[in-house]
Image 1 (cartoon, protein in one colour):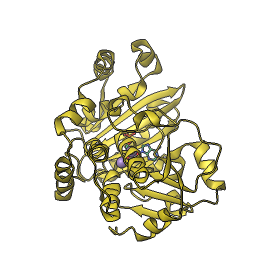
Image 2 (tube, protein in one colour):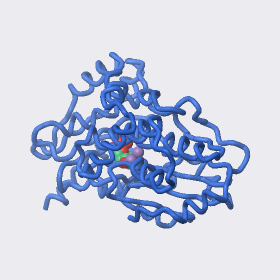
Image 3 (cartoon, helix red, strand yellow):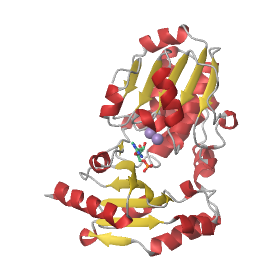
Image 4 (cartoon, protein in one colour):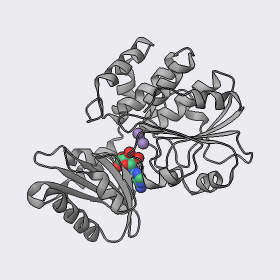
Length: 326
Ligand code: AMP
Ligand code: MN
Ligand code: MN
C-alpha cells in the first residue's frame, strides 16, 4: 500500500458534491471513517453527504457530523462516490449498490479488508486498500496529512474512535507500532482517550447486559472446547427490547474463554436467517470460513449471512475448523 494519494487528490480537485458510504450494520470504524471524511472534504469546500442504509451505533454519537447522516439516497447524482470499510461492494446495501452500478461518476474505495474477488471485479475508479491497516480511518488520516490540511480535534476524535473500535482497544493482531504512533498524533491533536473510550464503552443499556447474560447461559462448546457457539433468537431480543447490535459483541466474550480458538455467534434476523460473526485466535482463519458462506472480513474477525438452521450452520463451521486443524 502506498501512502501516496496524488490521483485521488487530483480527482478531488475536479468535483464538488461527494457522497460517502460505509457498510450496512455499521460499526465504529465505518462510522468514524465516514464522519472523518465528511469533515476533511468539507474543510476544503466540498458539498458532502454521508449515507448509511442503517443507523450508526448510538455510542459513536459524540463524533461531529453524527446527526447529519442520511438514510435515504439523494435524488441527485453526486460528482464523486467514496466507499469506506466495505470488504465487498454489496456491503453498502442494495440501493446504493444499484446506483453505483449505473452512475458514470467516479467511485473510490478506501478499505482494509482482505481483498475479495467481488472487490477486485467491481469497477472502482481508484482503490486504496491496506490489508495491514488496523482500521480504515488510518487511511483517511494519512490522506489528510498528505493533503496538508489542519488536523483538527474533531477530525482526530473521529479517526481515533474508529481506530480504538477496530483494534478492540489496541489489542487485536493488526495493532502495530504505527497504530500507537498515529494514536499519539491524534492525542497531540486534542483527543482525550478517556472521554472517547468512556463514551463508547460505558453506556451499555442494562437490558443488553441482562440479555447477554441469558444468552451466555446457553453457550455450547464443540471440538473439545476449541469452538464456542452461541445462538441469539429474535424472541430474546424482543423480550429484552434491545437493539440487536447491542448484543453482537458477545462473540468477543466467547472468544475470550480459555481454550477457545474459534467463536461463532448466530443472531436470528428473521426466521431461518442469521447474521453470523466469527472470531478466531492465531492461525485459525475465520475469513476462509466466512468466504465459504459468501461473506468475508479479516483473518481473525469475519462475518456472513446464513440461511438455514443453526445446527446445520454450526456443523459446517465445525467441519471447516477440523480441516484447518489438520
Ligand atoms: P462483524 O462480525 O459483523 O463484527 O464483522 C467482522 C468483520 O467481517 C468486519 O470486518 C466486517 O466488515 C466483515 N463482515 C461481516 N459480515 C460480512 C459479510 N456478510 N460480508 C463480508 N464481510 C463481512
Ligand atoms: Mn467495519
Ligand atoms: Mn474496519
